[in-house]
Image (cartoon, rainbow, N blue to C red; front, top):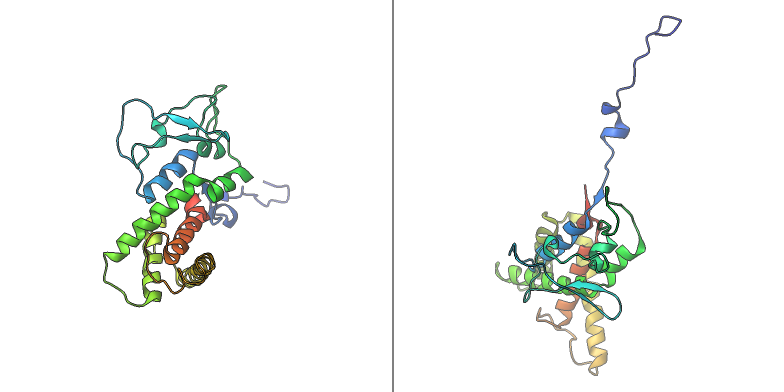
Length: 231
């Protein structure tokens, strides 16, 4: 209580706008991110126990986990050696194996973005996700119009990868981006085959302009903050 008789109350920060209404987002940890990529791509094996999955050290220094056929097991079952941590996990702050690790580090660094943007493993998973979405869309009612089919595939992509439907503005922007991607693949295919192959092709067969454009869109979604971050 102050000298003038006015009682001073401590501030209740629990009801303050700055603390309660602030939308703080966290990035997925290394294991959750890798396992999530595998899950949405349909490449996650549910097999448990047994020997650890071996890793391969490439000539360029990249360390990858060996798959079981066409699938990979969860990150916890990968072989972890101090000098051979899988590159995707190491880039996203996997705990250090050398000293005792009492707290996992958190960083935002360029190698994390480069791993998702340029890594062959993530590109492969984007292709698998694209094939999975296309198959799911084809099992629904057939749509003759290209715009309607693309809209359906985008909705299916969001449901699989983000567990929600795209908002109206998002859907409009994604449709515009997909249209541009398909046109660029058609132009590239036409230039590479004397202007005949790929131009006007509306099929979603592998290696078609329609599929490659959609695969690029799947890759962009896997790189988005909506996939990598948690609200």
